Length: 427
Image 1 (spheres, rainbow, N blue to C red):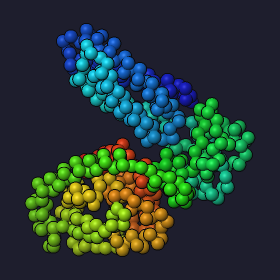
Image 2: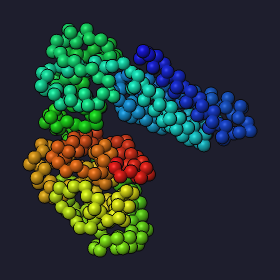
Image 3: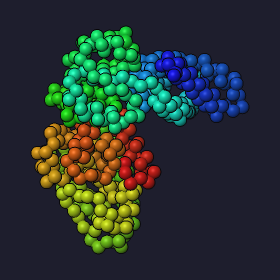
Image 4: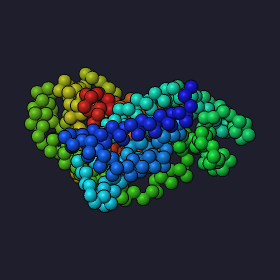
């Protein structure tokens, strides 16, 4: 079995190879006739970029692949490292390098790094997570408290966790590495903290769910944790998110106006009735908003709506496959009722029922609803109409509420666009 140290060394060599190859190709494309002389000049100037790349890689621990509990966590940290290095490289060349201004070379260099990194590192990290040793998952506390976690781990054998229960700290220390200690509360951290133990990770149960499953589990979520993340100051983020919303809102609105005659004609030919579907939903801070879409059903439905292909007319199915029925919501984004990313807004009467049945359901209304969201890219656009499924969606919504960032929004947008281009019926 390959050791973690060998994996780290492999990752270092892979990244070094990607940097050299990207620089070679960037210089060759810019100076094909004088490649060798220009490569020598550029190589010396790019050495500090190489140095910062590996320095930040060390700080982001991208070479300690075993420290990331999943490929998702690994690639998230890697992309943060890449973006920061991209910005540093431009600052470095435009402020500190006077005799060389490689605008095109630098830009192409980072494009190649991004492409090669995604292609090569994805294959390698997927290989690692399939071949990596089984990780001892030590649950510290009463067995019945961890009942849900045990089931979720057993239902996801790809993570290669071996579940162990123990309340004895000395016995836990003797358990073979690599190991992860799951605590019911963060207050137990002091008992396990050991900065020299690189292969042991200690997390509370909600943090573990965040990193592995991308949710905040209702069973384990405390009011103290909720208070911490809803009280964050996000004015800087809100400003830039609004800028992104306006850009996407304008794009969708213009696209709606261009396609309107054709879509309207298709709806009228396929099914008698109005062109638009309108419905009251609950938005930000429990404000009622009116959702507008291109109509895809023969008749409007309310309440728990089950999937019924017969209720969707033929042209409506076409609109749904390509998500064209959502286009008019671009106007709602410009108005400020919707965001491009956020929890999907629910019907007014349905919300009243769900708030009675599901704890913390009201928290999803602390965020502006969106056209797409964290729950949609994981669970799909189609709803399974049940309380249990709605709880699952809420757990994804709460994860988004806690972890809102421009980076996460871009991840969600990218995955949604990819689904559209793949002509998928689900996100």
